[in-house]
Length: 77
Image (cartoon, rainbow, N blue to C red; front, top):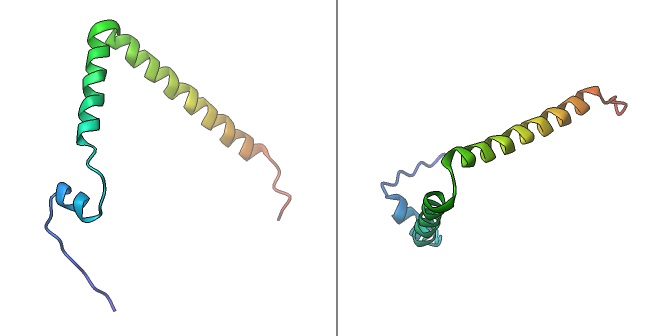
């Protein structure tokens, strides 16, 4: 048996239906704080550089893990 249910609801209505909390005030506050930090004491280029360094180190760690996995002997077979 297959049952399809189509619901025409907004994201807000769906959030309420599932009983999830409204995080809009928290989201707005976090965005405002980020804007303040960027405008006061953070160079946008420096911020991007920090994110990029983290991305590259994560990628390098993933590559090392995959390389070690490929090099390991699978003696369980």
